[in-house]
Image (cartoon, rainbow, N blue to C red; front, side, top):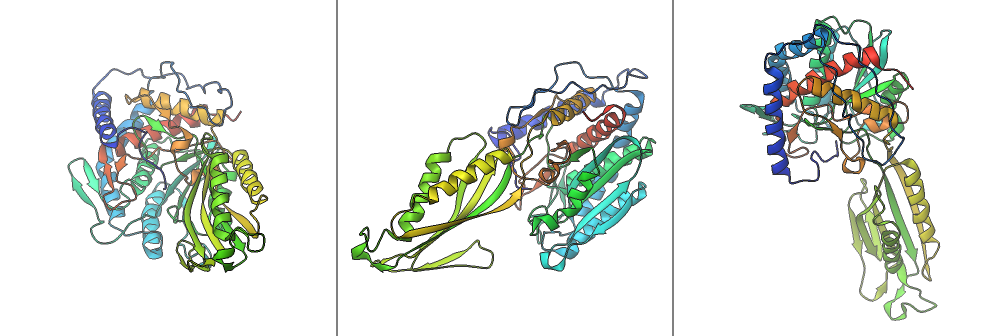
Length: 474
């Protein structure tokens, strides 16, 4: 997943604070305490004022105490914690970089067997060979009790290979995918196992989709994400298990798309540049366009426009990936070619469309002798903050506090990168960040805090149980 894992504070300080918070929360939640035998069925909080960009709030009301059934879920998670750590170790020891199709499939088989034991119908959603991707794990349990839930994970990792296997040191473990996101997948499975072993999974309608190419999706996305989108259309809520923390989840994410700019101009001797006959050349026109985009769009909340590659000269050639360019030219030649590419990130699809219109308008004011072509490619849609997403946050926050963990609020949408949950946002309300906490995501130093696996599973199990009893679409 391409997303920062920390709030905008110093990483080391935040990590130390989080671990202190989690340790205290675990101590409290593990302490013996008298609990009521039953509690009223949780009620769904009233929807908040619609907002696509405002910072979501958490409820200040006291959380509903754990019911006897919910306490059984908590205890079932704790009883299976060691088994879950062992499962995570097995998964991490399977190399599964996005392009390792056999490795991704092996992780899918491992998790698929776990879900099959819980009564899920499991299948593998293959993709066309042209996409060069392994496919996706899809597992379903049909029922009529509560909302139809879609649980989202992924099987692939950024890194794999030597020194990327499982290494445990006390309560921390290192390895590719340990936190992003095999740890989240295992937390999901542990929560489902607790529901199953306490008899509370019976009657629930749940679809699990673990994609095999989240870190580098196949193209076109309409095919690569067809199974996920199809599952979303048959669901009422989506719960995604990307990396989380004790105090933060995501109910909004920015969307992302890419753009490519090609400029052509008359080639000539440099002595004539800026003249009516020779014009300004491709490079000046390309730089003008980029700078006018910056002036027009820099500083708008949630909107970022990045230039990732630039090349200009007599000849420019891109490689097959479009991520590398070679250029040649001479000091005394007016360059006829300029190429630039980058990304555009946005809070709402309307903001994306507005930015694209402004970018196109700049091309109409071309310097003499130059013409430009601008193309866009859609990537991840925006996951806007909605009242329904805020309701999910309120239920999850109450769940966390009832278990003795900290209150939970949402990260600002602009602080999160793109994720698979974005693809389902147009169809169902969703919440992300329900997975484990870790460090070094997308690096060879990736690690996971093992106590966060138990916390994530406890919260997910009780959260799903409360949704099954009290969630209604509005």
